[in-house]
Image (tube, rainbow, N blue to C red; front, side, top):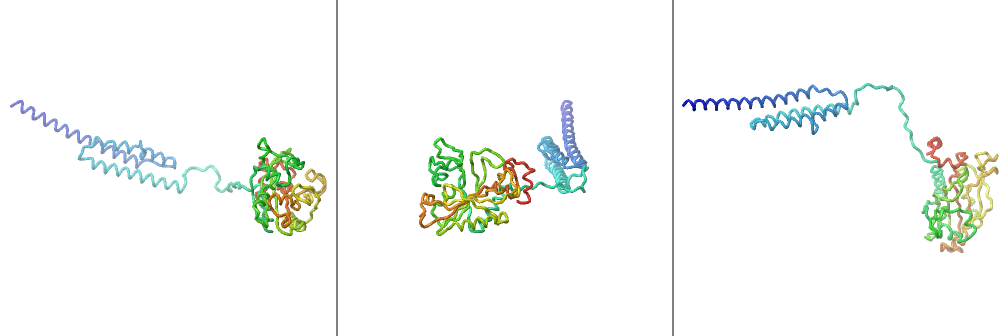
Length: 367
């Protein structure tokens, strides 16, 4: 009997200890949640960087809220619902505080000391501009488009037929020596084009007449680089094929071009030789750099050549399967660099290739 009495009291004691332990655990997790809630309320967010620190500390994957959620393992089953509600309230409070402060600093900027004068003028942004070669190229194209010419372009790597032979320059012809060529293959069949005349040949081969085109583009010649020459430069060539075209038509086109571009019809036409035109001429304008007093650009003659021109040789028409008895025409070609040097009084062609910002920024207003 005495033994049963002792067992009864031991059982009651153990039950009381379990209840006390449960109450202690319940008080422990509730206390931790309250402490976390108070900590979030008292956290001071003073700038944009502390907003991010707050998010990492409390809402991050390794933050305090994540750690607190692990307390659910210690919570009795009957208290888990209460635990979930409390921890969700704390999470919503943290998210609200983070969102409000984040929006405030993003909209109003950081509240921090400013070490420069807010009344000072703003820094002027550096705007870009077109290269002077591009500016003049567009002007030339615009002039010829107004009298019915259309722009046509072609490949810079060309075969022998389109670059030489079809232009009345057969193999071993001495006139080929006038153009030092960058050949790309040992058999000399492929090369970097030496002029944009290759585009004219391709256009005539289509036999879509009448034809009135201009061909701007980059060309290559093996020349010594100097104030007047470069191994890479730009050309604009023109071609007009129709019935009854005369040299007088060519002269009027050149006069119109000179007046529109230079503001004067004061030009000089000299007889010349080109394998693909006959008769041929070279067109000069007064040297605007030295005002015809003589300089290295005009070779001290007072005149600068701006283009070559002439009536298309019948042999070129025949090479393109065009009836030379019915059709004729004229062609012309000019270097854009030389035109640009005259317009802007530039005395050294190499400046176009040096990418000197001090030189290039002078043309921004002309873009």
